[in-house]
Image (cartoon, rainbow, N blue to C red; front, side):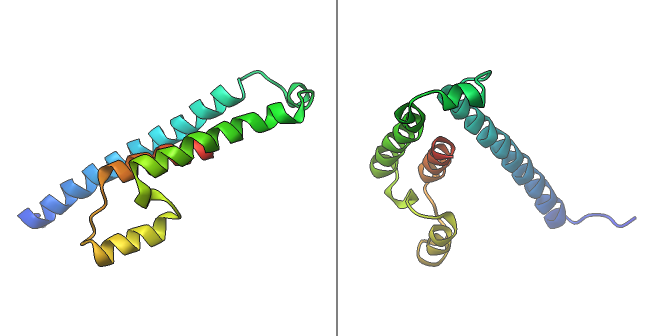
Length: 115
């Protein structure tokens, strides 16, 4: 069995850490989506009960979500607007791959609120 070099071992450990952090981030993101959904439309409420509500009551959760997400992006991370891939490409090309950590957090929170 071949012995791992120090650089290979370093990359293996780094890849493992990144994988674990990414996986935990995905679990946290899904949890946030479920939390927002449970607050907007409580568990146990059936489609029949929801359809009996007036139309404006059904529109209220998405409207509130939009009213929260808009100022969140505007005041905390203006560069978080738009889709993710073009902003990442812009950061890689023009900003040496640097993205402010607050942008990632705000974009994740805004996505969870708006999904």
